[in-house]
Amino acid sequence: MQALKKFLSSNGANAADTLLAELDGTAKVINKTGHSLSFAKTALTLLVWCKIICETVHEGLKDESFAMLSKVSAVFYARASSAENEKLARKAFKTLTSMWRSHPDVLEKCFDKLLEVDMYQVEALSYASICIRFFTEEKEMKKVHDKKGKLLETYLKLFINTKTLPNLKYMYGIKFLLKHVNHETFKDLMLPSIQKSILRNPEIIIPSVSKFLNHVTIDLSQYAEEIGKSLSSHLVAQNDQLRSTTVDAFGNLSKQCSDVDAIGKLIDVIGDVFYSSEGKLTSVDQKHSVIQALHAISNNAVSGKSNREKLAHQLYNKVLKFLETEGHEGILCESLKMLSVWTYFISENVPSTFPGVLKRAFTSKSSTSLVRTMYLQVAASIYKGNTLSDGIPLIDLFLNSFQKAKGQAHVAQAVTESLTAGIVLEKFAALDDDAISQKLQPVFSLSLDNEKQFFTSDKFLTSATQFGYEQLIVFYESSICKSFKTFL
Image 1 (cartoon, one colour):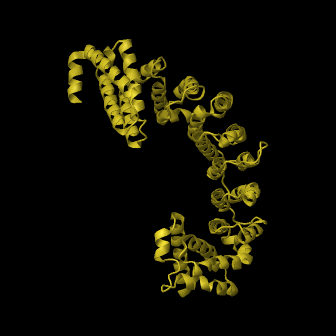
Image 2 (image 1 turned 45 degrees about the vertical axis):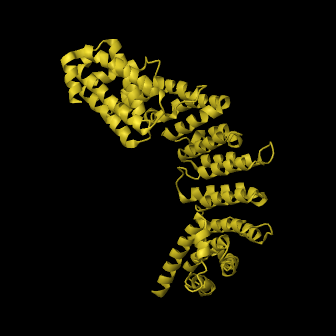
Image 3 (image 1 turned 180 degrees about the horizontal axis):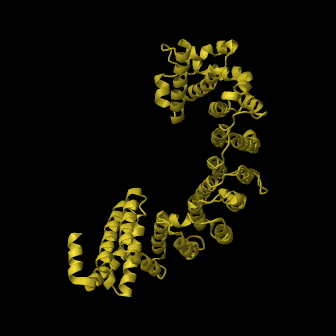
């Protein structure tokens, strides 16, 4: 780098013009390559070269040379930050900020040139967005306000109102622009474009919309139902990738919603896909996507125990009919797994129908061990703390399930069911009730029987699923802790 500085200092703007022509050719080559860490490192090195050119001879550069410097800098920054490597992206930003702080006039001049770029518009937008980040950190909010409007229009043109798939790798820099979207801009500019584009080109637009929803910082509660309705039909699209990105979009939308009613509306919008006017869903893949979307929106910004419990009850009631009529084991188990995530938020009032649903699931002739295990997982998430007393009438049901391991220690799934039932039963040990403690005695006796090894046989340990191993660890952790407390 010292040699480059010395070369430029000795030969001035003419040398810089020659070097910029070479860098322009390199930018074209790099821009045609795939995104990788090695290319990102190369781009970072070339960005440092641009910084040296700027710091050494920028005052002697002609307008066209400065425009080229701005253009290649945008390409190299965009490439350096597109490898999804946070350390590399920070170095690229630090390279630019050190140049901007030492030569403030360069930033303004460079920004103006970026808006004139035709060939590398996405890269220029990424670079301009990082300029917005710099203005924000320097607390120059007037500049942010003055410049963000045109950039957001450019963003819409390149990522939302487009007929070709945009390169989302460049979103690292652009996300700093999206953080400045306010409610007025979102309602008047962004939302109408998003809705129109989803209707026109969902396969192309929804991945961009998902990224957009992830990076805005405003609360999207008031728009949740409207956006959700635009997305919901694509949960049952024929295209696998489209369904997957739609699930992601719902997850990113819910993370920006803090209002309990907004998430409640999303539950209804997604849940209604199960019972659409076009008839019952028959495709396993479509059902899978709907369940994944309901799972995704459990990660939301709603606060307060009572609000979360309200949503858990709503979700439970929404999917209950589906649970009782679904015949596909895999889909039913996935639905129950999703339900167990939501029912964890139940802390005061157990759904009145749940005990009956559980009993029917265990006595049904078509019920399998795997399905019963997942129902037990839901029970484990519901019965805790203040709700334990509501589960007392079900203890015998749980004990019957737990005892299965005695005769089927060679069947991995039966042992997993027994372990899950044991986890539920061990929760009731927290109740100060002698009759219940007596009922639970076989649970602790069986778990600590080292001779018979009901839960640690070689057959189980060599054939259990990942979930089975997890249940084994949780069960023994709880057993040891409860036994230790009893001993004390």
